[in-house]
Image 1 (cartoon, rainbow, N blue to C red):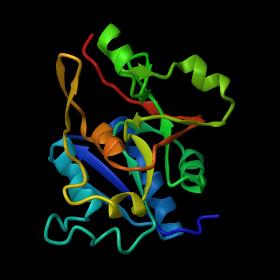
Image 2: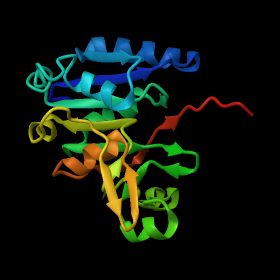
Image 3: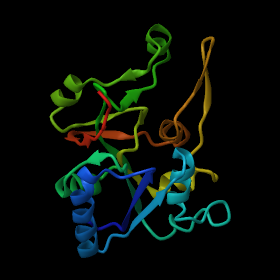
Image 4: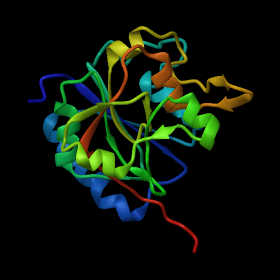
Length: 209
């Protein structure tokens, strides 16, 4: 049951693929039937786009404009490939902070913050496809997730000051690393994201070969 009021936020950056045009038209029709608003923004960098969306354009003057009106924000990136059933599964998950998963290259974009692994390999402890598939739909708590197909309850934002999305600079051993805006958000809030392991969505990457 979609008992909570949700809004769907979609940053489009520079473009939306024609291959996904049908998906977005279908989403729009489904959302109008369910009375779910969609907010989009184009031509903004990652954290700027997310801050704009999380405030529905309110920015620092009206940072709570959106979060005072809804229970949850659903984040969908414009290069995600998904079905309405996938979206229903995300919306109906009881967790305040939950996410589907998708691949970037061969790597699922969900990870545990593990500095030992980072110092050894140069990257965090990303979950593997095998681990996610073996979990049979159980939820797995992670330290951070990409925000391509993610639900955030507005309580997460209420503990933060605006801007909600920043790029943290972290020191790990001798290395200084710039953290992406979605991972920074995960580190800033006190609830960790749960991966819905049987909610794998597609990631469209059009490439030059």
